[in-house]
Structures are given as C-alpha cells and as structure tokens.
Length: 152
Image 1 (cartoon, helix red, strand yellow):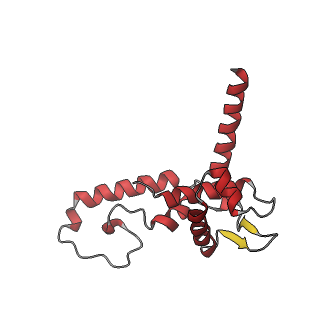
Image 2 (spheres, helix red, strand yellow):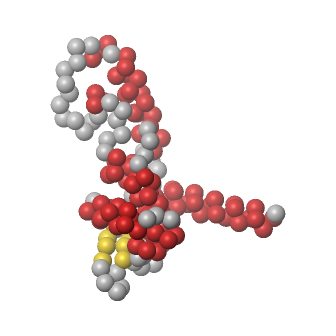
Image 3 (cartoon, one colour):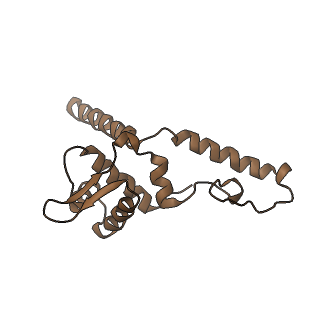
C-alpha cells in the first residue's frame, strides 16, 4: 500500500499540532514552514481534519489550529482512513461495504483468504498506534540525533 502525499502531510501536520498540544493555537504557515508542507496543500488538509473533528480551527489574529483531542486519543488508522478510505486490499474483505457481491467461489477462494490475512496483519500493526506514539518516537529520535552530533 502506498499512501498519498495528502496523508503523509496530514500526519506531519498533526505531529506538529501534537507537539504544541496544550500550548495554544498554531498558524498554518508555522506548520508549513516547520514540516516543509506547501501552504495551499496544507489548508485543504487542515479543512478535512477540521471537518472530521480531529482539529479545531479559528480564524483571526488569535486564531490558528489546535488538536481537538489529546494526542493519545488520535489513532493513526483514523488519520489514514480519513484520507485514503478503507485500507482493505479488496472489496471482498472491506468491512465498510454492507453488501458483498456474490462470488461463486467465495467459500474456497484462496485469494480472499490471502487478502484477509494481509488486511488483518496491517490493521493489527497499526491498531494501537496513536499520534502520541509518533510524537514520542520523534522526540526520542531528535534526542538521539542530538547526542550523536555532540559526541561527534
């Protein structure tokens, strides 16, 4: 599975907002500069995140963007599915489709079993990953990099 640039930028923008969680609103241009995201593209991403209730956006001099929930309550799967749709590799294993087209070989279909195994493994690998996990990983990576630079 290849994620779109929109999804990657959304995660980066949320990382920035997560780093600033509890510290007030953050301007779009600050997010764009810090995370190297084109501003016009970022505005569309932020609107999608706002409409999904993941962030709060306020216009005006004291405005900006703010996470609507604690970073440990925002799942990575939620973000990816917001921008990519279902992660199911095939419609036959997509739980979002309420009807399943009748497949004459469904009961013995090895391909469906393969798709289901792939899908289950992917969901399991990201099930408990939150924005807070990514923030912690990023903070640790920066500390390690800082120690390496000082030691060198």
